[in-house]
Image: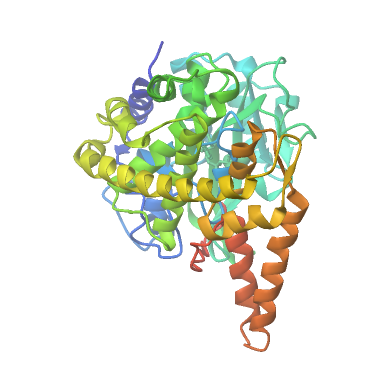
Length: 470
Ligand code: ATP
Ligand code: MG
Ligand code: MG
Ligand code: MG
């Protein structure tokens, strides 16, 4: 089996062999873009090169970029554990041309690497192009010999990329791998495309126009290429598994999570292990890049990721803090490719231990209140929604945790009452603000606080100024 570490190397070797400069991953915290919460695509560190603001001693490059999509416009947090293909932290493999080669070469490289170097059968691949991009359609036919029905024209923004309302933009072409009929899902553009059968593995962006105020005003003087391929998704394909969480790197983390909690890595508990493994990676890499848990901004997103994992550790019945004990496995899997992880190991462990110790205290207080509230209730009874809301509001105790904690006693929770208490609190808070002249921003605050859950949120809003990024 080809390891994920080998696949990363093989990608970078291929493009280096084709004259691309091998550029190390930039840190997860963008240094040149205050509007962006975390680097979420391979092209982010090259933005100024594409716009011409910055020049580099090379015109083509390749990288494996650390990405986090857990907040802002690209938020995959809620997908984790539930789709086969989303992580909060992942690596994006990319090749870039800054006014050097264009469409034909980009498609040739992608097809050669996938089908010749890596031997993926052509029948397993389907591609999309932007509906008006006849050039890309013809090139796919010529280079890959794909039949017309496997080159799907997509009319939506999914296949048109823009850096923002002003700047470079152009059509995209996405490459999908068919994991087989036994998995639910349809080809891109079909009503069933949200299933996990056809998985997008690689996105090619052809930057060829310039926009002003969201309207195309001309051709880009030097057409450019930006591509992004999820390392974990291509590893799943090359390792013959359907789910990203079954690749070698994840298996090592999940096995360790199962061993340390004395639980099974299959069946009902698998989603918890996946969340733990995913969030361990994002937490570890974020701390290594200087983010620490906090009540606002980037640190708040990190805290939320950590606590979500810790809640799953609790659900698995972990008696003591778990996350910090998984760090050695993470470092063993990924430390060679990312030495910053090795350097930061003690800090990552200490941060996770401290956060989990505190969170367990919160959990303990909440569970005590829950105990008192359920005195006198018996199997078949229902906990009032107002009590569940108090737990949420005072202890940051998520609703599903309350529900879960009472499940063994066969006590239900009044969901409608909980929702009503939440709505009432929001209404009262908004009413209190009437006439402040800040209604719009307050509204946003409550919606966000609601979405994020708990009482810690202090109003940080990321506006992520750019368009869809690859
Ligand atoms: P999807 O439609 O599956 O959510 P996307 O179109 O949002 O993917 P892009 O922005 O095109 O993704 O990113 C380029 C590539 O990065 C994708 O083709 C995919 O292989 C990978 N990728 C994107 N999001 C994730 C994620 N959350 N976890 C793992 N890989 C990802
Ligand atoms: Mg997406
Ligand atoms: Mg997509
Ligand atoms: Mg895409």
